[in-house]
Image (cartoon, rainbow, N blue to C red; front, side):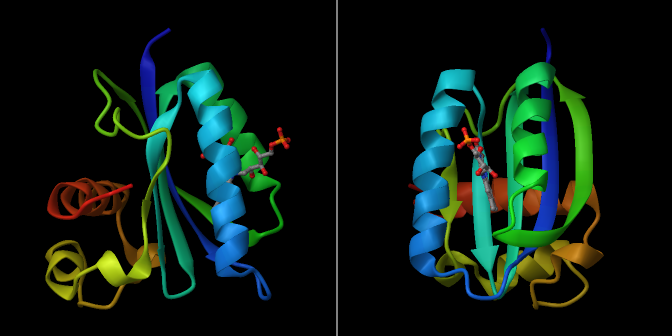
Length: 139
Ligand SMILES: Cc1cc2nc3c(=O)[nH]c(=O)nc-3n(C[C@H](O)[C@H](O)[C@H](O)COP(=O)(O)O)c2cc1C
C-alpha cells in the first residue's frame, strides 16, 4: 500500500493539562509504532497541529480515533496527500512543545508571527512542521 500524509489542526478542550498531553503521546507512540505510522505533534497556545504519515489504511484508522477524542475539538483537516516518502520517519510521534516554536519560523509560513493554524494552508502547515523538526531537537 502506498504512503499518505495527513495534516490537521484542532483546539485543546478546556481542562486538558500537560500531563494529559503526555498520556496522549505515550499511547500514540505505542499504537503508531505497531501500525508503522510516523509523524509529529505540535502544541502551541491552545492549538494542536499534527502530521501523520503511513499507509492510507492505517493513517485513516488513526485519524478516525483522533476525530472522536474529546481531549480536543474543532478538528479541521488541512492536508491529505499521497506521498513517495516519509518526512518524519524517525518519530513514531515527535513532539514540538510551545517553547520550541520560534516567531521567525512561524512568520515564514503565516501572515503574522502569531501561530494561527486555522488560517494556514495545508502546505504551509506541513512546511512549518518540517522546518521546525530541522531547526530543533525533537524528541
Ligand atoms: C491531539 C491528539 C493527537 C493524537 N495522536 C494520536 C496518534 O498519533 N496515534 C494514536 O494512535 N492516537 C492518537 N491520539 C489518541 C487517539 O485519539 C485515541 O485516544 C487512541 O488512539 C485510542 O486508542 P485505543 O482506542 O486503542 O485506546 C491522539 C489524540 C489527540 C487528542
